[in-house]
Length: 455
Image (cartoon, rainbow, N blue to C red; front, side, top):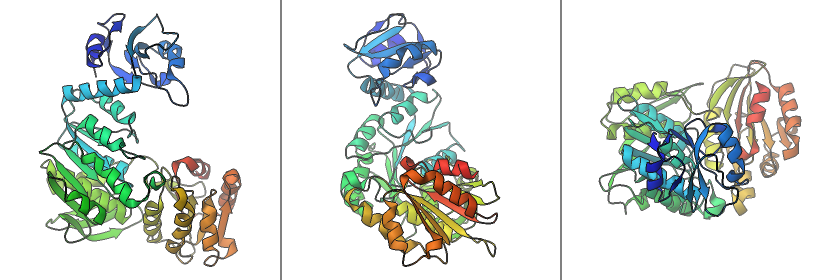
């Protein structure tokens, strides 16, 4: 972005105290990441961003938003006083979005939205100037930041949108007014706050609340909860999945160690993705539908999918320090995601004498059903397929108890939250060079630390 403070002040209904001809070229809410020409947005979270104004100034900030009546307003930097810095940042993002006027693709879902975002952006980049959500900047802070980071020549903006409460996607849809919306699937993520899968589906459908009249809704047609709700959407609709009544469905699927291949109805092309699992094929199908919406050929889409780069810690393969292969999928977790990963992991061929080892951390935000949902994972774990199981976290004790009748004590390992280092030590002593290891858990369990120790 590139705007004078005078224009920014007008966009957010404020007045500039200082040189309103100052040119702003970036926006940041983290004082450590501000740069020369940057506008600092002091947000209130666990810490009050206003307390870091000195750091922002020393790092080159040219201006700052400032909440009205907040003490210690700086006098050595341009200031725009506002009622709420977050709301003003969102207003500025909406203004900049309208100014650049890209086509907006909005993606949500209980699982797969980050991977789908990466796939979709790669597909669309074959023909268009594309800007996408970085990492998982997908909430009421991350979405406006993504918008403000896009270049003026952006033609298509691919936005990942997350939620854990009803109403959040309604507001993000209102902010962005998407041209295309995508829902990858409905799982149990955030069921603690939404009560049921039906409640989750209702909340996910909010992404369509401000879908443009000539827009298109692309969704997983294998999910009855979405089909029921999609019937009420007047815009054009496209479904993807594995059933023959979907608009686009996979007709062939094979998974290998580091990639998967599939074919689809009404196409002669074979598609390859650098990830394994039917759930990732489903994500690729949704990206394919978006590509077709924008007129891309199946050949262009196939080339893009084969070469796209996933965001870190999404079924990412790494090499361990004794030669083992490690699949890191530690950014988030819920029962649907764990089942999909374990199923895919169990289909990988290993040399004779080698083992499949699963390291599973707690699935968070499952509410009163947490114990039952953790224990229920026992039916997807077979000692003949997943040879060793390491469980970590308070809630995983429920799965450990459920697996005692299936696994021998020497093949079932449980650790409390305080025993991460103990678990790492046991893993390092147990893993052999030709083993393959998968790690899956909610981000709050920090299994990425285990991955680093194993490397």
